[in-house]
Length: 257
Length: 263
Image (tube, rainbow over all chains, first blue to last red; front, side, top):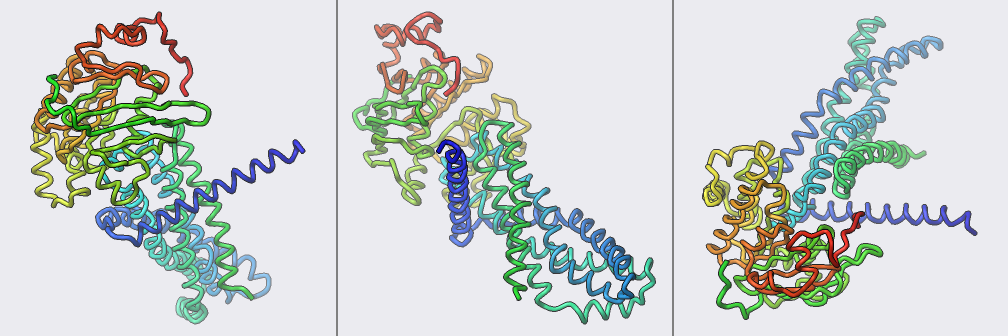
C-alpha cells in the first residue's frame, strides 16, 4: 500500500542511521583502549571540556540550587514541611539537576564546538590529509574527545553538586532564616552514597553522548559552511535529546522499585 | 622536465578502475601506469573524476571494481597497519593545502615525522625548518598559524609537508589553482626541483596546461571515466585527438560538452 511506503522508508532510514552511529561509537571506543594514545591531545581536550566549562556549569548550578530552595520553601510551607528543604535540595541536585543541567550546558558549549571543528576539518580535506599522513582520524580526533568527555563530566558534575547545594544553602540561610549548622547537618545526614554515585555515572554517560554526537556529526558533515552549520545544530539537538532519554533509563536502573 | 631513465619499472599500476556514486559513473574501467621516477599529469575538466582517482589510490574511497598496485602490491581493500605502511610511501599536496588549523606551520610540516615516524619534537622541528627553507620560507614562518598565511604560502607549506617524510610517491591535487600566474610558476618550479631531488614518482591532477607542461613527463587525459589519450608531454600538441585539442586550447566548441550541474 502506497501509504505504508513512506513509513517503511523512514523506519529503514532511521535503522540505518542507528547502525552507522553504533559502528562509529564502537570504532571510537575501540581506539580509546587500543594504544598508542595521544596524551597531549587528551590533555588539551580535558582542559577544553573540564576547565573551560566550569564557569557556565558553576553559574547554572548555583542559580538552580538557589531557585530550588526558594520554590521548595513556597510549596513546603503550605504543609509546614520547611525542614525538608535541605533534603530536597541535595537529592534533586545530586541525582538529577546537577548531571542533567551540566550535561545540557556542556552539550551546547562543547558538542557544538566539536562538531564545528571536526566538520570544518572534513570539508577542508584536513581529515583526508590526516589519513594520507598515516594517522588514523579516529585515534587522533575522536578517541581523545571521548576519553576527555567520559572522565571530565563526572568531575564537572561533582563541582556542580557542591556549588548547587551551596546555592540552596545561601538562600536558605540568608533569605529564609534557616540555622546554618542544622541545614548542613540535615544535608550531610540525608544524602547517601548512591545519590551522588548515580549522578556521577549519569555524568560519565552524558560526557560520552555529548562528545560522540559532536564527533559523529562533525565527521560526517558535507557541503561546505551550510553542512558544518547543520552538523553543529544536529550535534547539540541529538546530544540534548539523548541526555534526557538516557537520564530516565539510568534512573530506572539505579532506583527501580 | 626530462624523462626518467628507468621508466620500465612501474610504481603505480591501475587496471579497470571503476567508481560510481549512485547512478553517476565517475571512473569507468580506467587504466593508468606511473613508472619509477616518472611525473604523470592527469588533465580533464571539472567533475571528470580526477580527485576521485587520487582518493581511490590513497584508499580514501573504495573503488567498485578494478586493481591498484603500488610497487606490485595490491592496495585495494588494505586496512590497518598494512595500509599505514603503504601510505608512508606517499606525500600529498591538497588543492587548498589542507593545513591543520590547530597546529603552527612547523608542526604541520613535521606532522608525518612526529605521528608517523615517531621522531622527537626537537629533531622534527629542525627537519621542518629545513623543508620550509627548501620551499623558500624562513624559520619565522614556522611559528605562524596557517590562518596567517596567504594562498601561495599555504601551497608552499603544503608542499613542504608533502616532501617532509621523503616519500617515494607524491600526489599534487590542482597545485596552481587559485594562485596568480607568477606564484603558480613558482610552485611549478618548486615541484620540479623537489621531485628531482627526491627522485619520487608523481601523479598530478590539474586543468592548468602551463603547469602540466612544466611538471609532466607524460600527460593523460581523463574523460567520461576513462583515459582517452596518454603520451609524452612533447606530443600533446600533435595528439590527433579532438577532445585533447579542445581541452588544451580551451575552446568552448568541440566534442566536449560542459556539464552545467555538478554530479
